[in-house]
Length: 169
Image 1 (cartoon, one colour):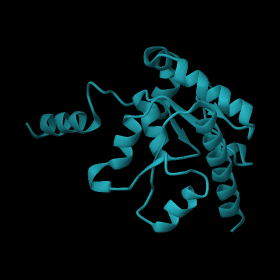
Image 2 (cartoon, rainbow, N blue to C red):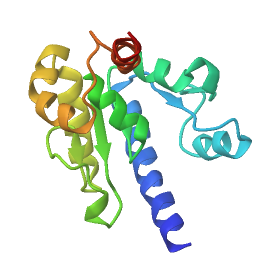
Image 3 (cartoon, rainbow, N blue to C red):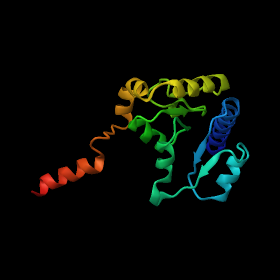
Image 4 (tube, helix red, strand yellow):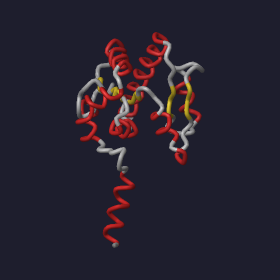
C-alpha cells in the first residue's frame, strides 16, 4: 500500500506542476485518460479546471496515442505510452517524482526530471516547447533507439509480415 501512496503523491506533484505551468503560460492541455472510470475524472478535476480536456480512454480507437500524437509535449510519470511515443521521436518529459532511483528513465537528458522542483519542471517543459521537432529528434535519437526502436518508414507489423511471407514462400 505504501507504493500506491507514493505513486499517488508523485502524480499529485506532476498534476500540481502542470496546472501551474498552464496558468503561468496560458497553454492548452489534454489528459489521455487511462480508463473510463469516473474516479479518474474526479481526481484530475481536483487539479484542473474545465479548460483542460480529458480524452476518454477508448482502446479500439487508440485514443491515447491519438491525443499524444497531436501534442507538442507529452508529460508522463512512468507510462509505457510515454516510452512508446519517445521511441517515435515525440517530445516527451519523463517526470520521476518517486523516491526510487530505479524508476528513473534509463537515459538522462532534457526529456527527464527527477527533482520535484517546479522551477526545473518549468525549465524542462519550456525548453522542449522551444526546441524544433528535428532538433529534439537529433538530441534524443540514440536514447530513443535503445528504448523503443520504432521505424516510421517500416512499422513492426510490416516488418513481421515480411518475415512471415518470406518464410512461407
